[in-house]
Amino acid sequence: MLDRLDSLLEKAKGALEDSRDLAGLDEWRVKYLGKKSELTDIFQAIGKLPGDKRPLAGKRANEVRSALESAYGERVEALKTLQRDAILQERVDVTLPGRPIDAGRLHISTQTLRTIYDIFAKMGFQVFEAPEVETELNNFELLNMPAGHPARDMWDTFYTTREGVLLRTHTSPGQIRAMRQFCPNPIRVILPGKCYRYEQVSSRSDFMFYQVEGLAVGRRITLADLKGTMIEFGRQMFGADRKVRFRCSYFPFTEPSVEVDIDCILCGGKGCSVCKQTGWLEILGAGMVHPVVLENGGYDPREFSGYAFGMGPERIAMLRHRIDDIRYFFGNDLRFLSQF
Ligand code: FA5
Image 1: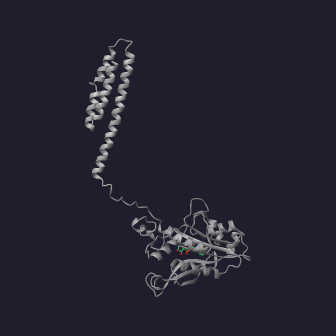
Image 2: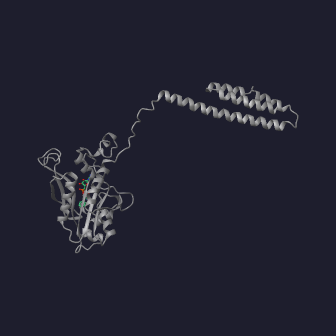
Image 3: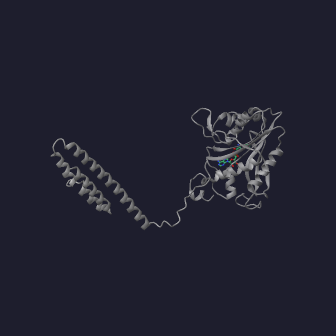
């Protein structure tokens, strides 16, 4: 019986090697492992052997069956791989160049922010991060806008359900945080981040946008320092020939306050639809830090002075790239985003 099993194993393995396709393999399986196979006959014959011969023959028969089953499994896998490779070789031209992977790119706002960081880094400004969810105290009160101050209406605000907590309407509350952290040392920081306004969305105004705030505090800082810094920024951002103009303005946290314009990059100051025939384009608000704000930040206004400015990177990008609607920025349309 044992000899019969050994010769069956050898014969079946040889036949398996000779099977060249999956149909042939199936025939092999029926012949050597099926219900009517020689192996099934042997198992039946073992039952009729004398009791002392049965265990050894049974054990060997089980071993042969497992060996055949695993050899069959391996051969199936090997044949499938061979078949797949043959199909691939026939249908795929492996010498063709691959399709390029679209690696994505930086968002236009991020690109503009980085350009702004680079310009101010060269002038010694560090980036200072402040939170988007702010207290009413930092966003208004400590910026010289106590409750009921009419200037609060300049910023339509998203309030949270928590009393006194809101989404910052501008990056200016970061001024208070920076001053309280660095006081009594001099400061030269820019504060970038998202701001939120409960505003009518239009081609120039979104309800969420970025701002970059700037703050310099020290001894003997004057409006001339602000002017020089803004002129340098305007020229580096928009071109060396740009004219930069200061206009009187009003912000509760700066005194005096100004708005900074550049001559229109489209018409060069002659007047066109982009600059609404004025020849000038507004790029940011700025001013000398109000003594009350300096004091709220921990600085003695008799000893320290400072300037601050705040700009919108989306509006700057709109000017630089002639984008006519701010809603494209966060509309997630790849046809727009992939141009930059
Ligand atoms: C401010 O928010 C002041 N905090 C700026 C400032 C800082 C003045 C420090 C003085 C000293 P304003 O509301 O003008 O000011 O906004 C500043 C800039 O943010 C604007 O020039 C504009 O570029 C951008 N901005 C304002 N509102 C929107 C909006 N809804 N969508 C897109 N950009 C906006």
